[in-house]
Image (cartoon, rainbow, N blue to C red; front, side):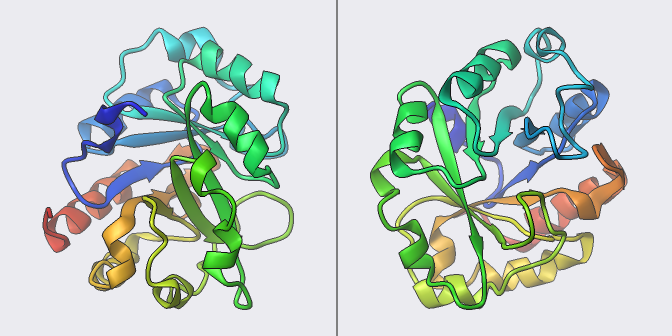
Length: 228
């Protein structure tokens, strides 16, 4: 993995997902956001493919790392978009197996997403993926594979105590959640909390963010969680 990816001004870092605008991608970097998510799942209303070409994204110099989000895609299709868009990391958000993750991880850093329900054991969910991924993401279970805009029970992570790998916290995080995240960051499991993933709760329309909400959230997280 590119060591620069681990270098954030804040802990946790911030990822804004579902980006579809060149101007907003540049703006994220100016706000101190570290990661931008670009969705390559055709059924998503935030799918980047009909909105921005690969060369438009690849040829720009952004201050953010670009994460491509894929759902049950073929290996060749993932790697095709990695090259076309100049992606820095890949997020696998479907039913990918450890072997599939390993194939992608041979070429680029991999985040494996796990959708959590009230009945799930986090440690059981991630079992078998440790050696074939660079990071985890914990999101909310819902119909289909798109974001639900809802939170899962973060106590499921607290119960796990130790996931032993850097992870992204996702699932319906909204602008008013900074205090709850500051409290969560005090839990032992949060020693591996690498980044917060925000999306639909910060939007004006699918794929278009309310940058003032993003800016306020970033400042509140930076103020509330000290660098360790």
